[in-house]
Amino acid sequence: MSGLGALIRGLAPKRAAQAAAGRTHLEFEGVRKAQGDQAKNRIIIAIACFGLIYSVIGGRLVYYGLKAPEIVSSINRSNQLLASRPDLLDRNGEVLATDIRTVSLFAEPNKIVDADEAVELLATVLPDLDLRGIHRKLSSNSRFQWLRRQLTPKQQSQILALGIPGVGFRPETRRFYPGGPTASHVVGHVNIDNKGIAGMEKYVDGQGLGDLAAVGMTFNEDLKPVRLSLDLRVQHVLRDELAAAIDRYKAIAAAGVVLNVHTGEVIAMSSLPDYDPNNPVEALEKDRLNRMSAGTYEMGSTFKAFTTAMALDSGKVKITDSFDARGSIRIGGFTISDFHGKNRVLTVPEIFIYSSNIGTARMADLVGIEGHKEFLTRLGLLTRMQTELPEVAMPHQPAEWKKINSITISFGHGVSTTPLQTAVAAAALMNGGKLIEPTFLPRNQQAAESLAVQVLDPTTSLHMRDLMALNVAEGSGRRAQVPGFDVGGKTGTAEKVVNGRYSSAVRFNAFLSAFPIDNPEYVVLVVIDEPKPEEGKPSATAGLNAAPAVGAIIRRSGAFLGVKPHFGNGAQALSLSY
Image 1 (cartoon, rainbow, N blue to C red):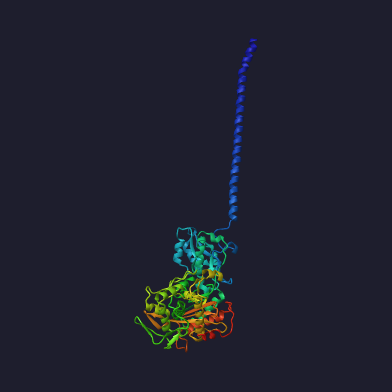
Image 2 (cartoon, rainbow, N blue to C red; image 1 turned 180 degrees about the horizontal axis):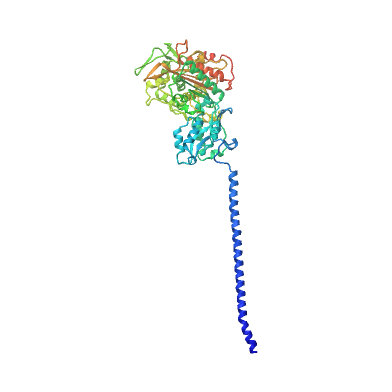
């Protein structure tokens, strides 16, 4: 037994060693397996990360591939470029102003490789470039510079062919005026950024378009066209006849307006010399002033219509009254006399048709200074006219009215007003005594009635129609007669001030008319600045130039205005009633 026990005790250490070795092997295998699993997990995570990264990159590439470019090298299609301004139309839907698509040239100076070479290449296409200024822009540290706005398609194509790095094109809109100068002073124009700076273009901006454009909303709106009160057909006739008058009478300027007496709508208005709004730099020349609303003038004997209306409306003078027009009037060191004096007592109608300064002055004196001033103010002749057109001048009047002022103002000297507001006041004489603010937008008669202010007794208006008709039938306005259209009117020949004194050789002529005079629908006013006598004519008074110009305008535009001609003895019959 002792031997067997010794054997067993000898085997025990071996078994213990074998067991320890087995445990060590198992532990090693476990560690190796765990490390393998960790490496596998890392590989899977890395693959997932790389897959995600490439998916994002691929997605962005697809996004940029489909996104419309902000900076392009050609003009977008028309359905991708919305108008930034509404079209302006005449009353019949004819386009007066619209946007057209164009591009402008820009540079990114930080991408320009050689500024000298770029300038030389651009000069081959745009020879009028300011080379020094362009070089300065291309050499700057900025990231964007305009080089030339509103290129033609040919210029764009030629510059593209040059392949200049760092130079590109932006699509823009450019304002285009199909009629050129036909209605320039009414329509106005825009600046290089397509913002209205004159005429109805400026008015449209003032109605909120400018604010919308400032925040970019305009480009996302399909803008509704703005319709004006102008009739392009009548506008063409008016401008054409004014141009003919300038040429015929060697005048320095002429202007005119056709006004609806019942609505206040300006159907046509022109002032020559004018300018082409497609080249608005011409508008800066002082001779191209809008004389109808932005210039003030002494309107001469046309003011006798207002003086006569004032006298009749005051109740102090009746249509059958007479006034002594013999000799002259001496007042304040001045002598008032008549151009072709009859040197006798004249009735009110005779004072009107003979354009008597003396008779008119006596009527004004009867009304009085304060009454005279109040009447002209009531007719809007002494205050700034209210209308949509921004270019409106303030009339000039004496700081203190004295008797001499009232006397001279009665026949159109001493107060300067705009021709347009003269026409507006005349409309009140013709339409039953209602003063209606002029408008360059469509307005119906119902809307006009709500704005009208009664400034005259309707009976006074009837008398003034008769007197205007009589003056064309028998007085200084005979050359304005148009068969079929009964015309009434009053001439005005105002001497202009030269070196501080009135000169009889330099005149500002006008003819203020209405038709058909038995029930007037339109006032037509024409002014001619410094006309010269026609060959074979002794003088250049308004009856010899402004009156026939008005007649020609009415003859050509009457049908467009919807006035039906009729033939009778209306104007002649009126003369028999006095």
